[in-house]
Image 1 (cartoon, rainbow, N blue to C red):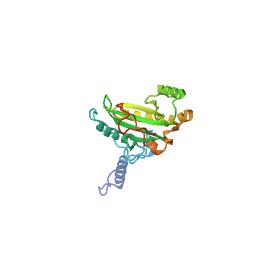
Image 2 (cartoon, helix red, strand yellow; image 1 turned 90 degrees about the horizontal axis):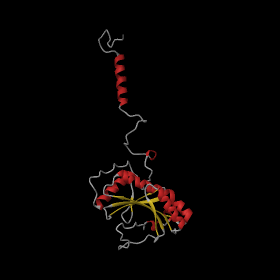
Image 3 (tube, rainbow, N blue to C red; image 1 turned 180 degrees about the horizontal axis):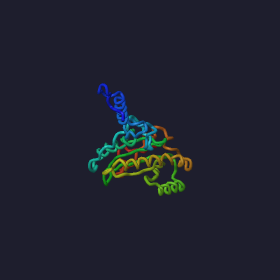
Image 4 (cartoon, one colour; image 1 turned 180 degrees about the vertical axis):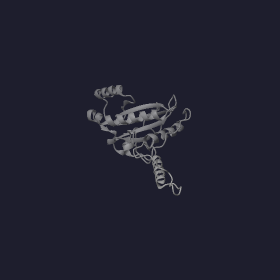
Length: 237
């Protein structure tokens, strides 16, 4: 058996000090996470760490926490503020167009999120104008309708006044939460990015991103109240 004391002095031996120091160093090291351990989402994210599929227009620092929802949204302005907070969590940032709509880009396709009134309460629209200058022919109509049949979120539509193809999804805003908006935004943005060039190559026209900036900036969604020709409203071509 090894003694912990020097028999001549009664003082602790050097071996005991060494063991205590080693144990202390080991304890201190145990409090520090290794490079391979999960940091629990703390600190700025790197591009390789991003789990969301969307590319924000504005990126800066760690993504914020989603805002808490308190009660039911009946006021459009309150809902708009809530949606802005949710989009900051989903995307990291966004732009606001001339009509007050949130907008961002994903794989070369521009998507929009709108907030407005409707006969059954405030609603949130998620849409992308995928193609311009394309005529509605039977083959295009067949393609859009059969594609709609397979989509989980959103549906294609055609704007005859502006010869434009849209992909749209509408959410009731009164009880909107993060997963609901995130699913709709991701689905519409990725579907538009996957199919706009296919539509152009098969049916003519141009993708929305190929249009001049001044044309893109004039995009305005339909008024859910049905007052399409309200004062100040105009087409975007």
